[in-house]
Image (tube, rainbow, N blue to C red):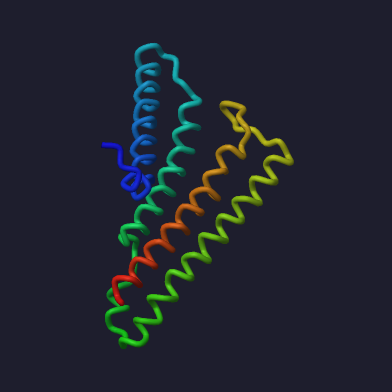
Length: 157
């Protein structure tokens, strides 16, 4: 059955799996055309590289949602309880600051690319379409950090 709540909780996984399937099909088509027809599809590399950036950002958002991101628990567990409590607040705030800054810089990059009308090498597509993944992905990551932090606060109360 169609479950909108499940989709909203797993949108990164759905998009990532779909993107990975498209990447696999593109790579397979490139291998077939290269070795069977001796005519490589050069544009597939451009699409695959940019899809991998999207995939990385989807994976990062998913990791924050599930609280499976890299962390320094070894050192954190050695600290006093009051310091650990402060870290539980500070770490998400610092992560939000990092990804919000990265998203803003991605936005500025898009503005420059649109102004300069930069196009990609193989396809001649506007480069800002590829750069769009940075602010969109960072927005998804910030949303998931906030979501996971609120969830964790509710669980500890």
